[in-house]
Image (tube, rainbow over all chains, first blue to last red; front, side, top):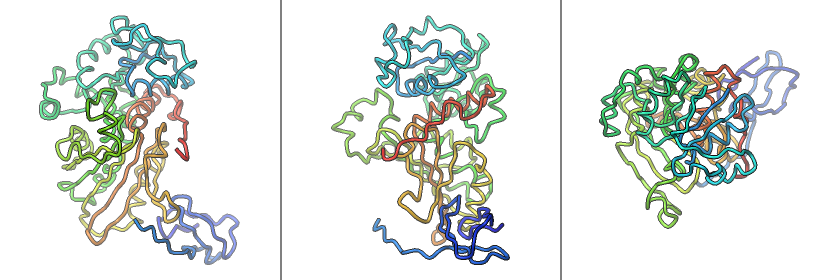
Amino acid sequence: MTECPECAARVDHHDKILGEVFPCRDCGTELEVAATEPFSVQPAPREAEDWGE
Amino acid sequence: MNVAIVGGSGYTGGELLRILLGHPQVEVRQVTSEAMAGKPVWRAHPNLRKATSLAFVARSALQPADVTFLATPHGGSVPLVPSLLRDGGTVIDLSADYRLKDPTRYREYYGFDHPHPELLQESVLGLPELHREAIRGARLVAVPGCIATAAILALAPLARAGVIDARRVVVDAKSGSSASGQDPGRAGLHAERSGVMRAYAPAGHRHTAEIEQETGARVALSCHAVEAVRGVLATVHAFATRPIDEKELWRTYRAAYGSEPFVRLVHETDGIHREPEPKILAGTNYCDLGFAADAHAERIVSLAAIDNLGKGAAGNAVQCLNVRAGFPESAGLGFLGLHPA
């Protein structure tokens, strides 16, 4: 178990594999598994968006 | 459980009826309307065609019920509540008449001296997220106003956590036209309302008193009418007393609402619906709640979106009924909204 680097929500290991990308259940941030032992995640790279608003 | 609705021909009454007709543990026995007595309820609420054979009755024909909902204009509930309580049922009042504990605030904001200050002390504000245990034992539940509901849900966790300057809070609210009810006057004419972005109460809005009562903050509230039929978006601007980041905001709001069935935290980093917006909440009882930390201005921005007729009135009233009666809290309130809408 670790926490989301964006919102601090609990993130469980389950059967995730190194490099797997999945959304945080609370803030929706795409997370990438950075390590499995110990389990850690980081925000997945994403394209910048210009909302123009 | 049998229930009655007083003042059922307005928008709030119609929304109550729509929800309660689908409630698995409730039978609606009577719906009153002076102007429409004798007419089928679907004459006022055409979405209810074929859903019920109920017709409006005059208030003089009202019978005691297990629970009576009052969807009356402000001032209309004041004389009704004492006799309904004497009949022994529970009263869930959607008007402003029993929301405020301090009777002097009725003179200040509503222009009359409240004749039943003892009932103001007894009434419980109908916001389960803040008063669930008190609602369970209440005879009189006073459902907060739509703008107040949104603002209180956004602001209360920050005020309780002591991370903001409670003497300096700004609430900017936008609301749809149904919040004005069925008799908004000339301001509601299509020619006046269409395309509108109107500050109708830049200061002095009545809901200020409710927000202050429930949060302990001094609130500067400005209200705007926008191009929508349903919906309230309340943007709270509060100033932090110490540096605070978004992780701490997540923790603060998660601690307040993490187990709430009708509050969803919405502050996402991807997609087109990153922050709360009322449009997708029409017909639901949800409050979507978002936030941002503005380090530059030492400001916390908190956003609450609701359907003014849903979580802002009828949906919340039914949630209070469920709490009071010991029903599952989401009974009758399972609608998830429409997208696109």
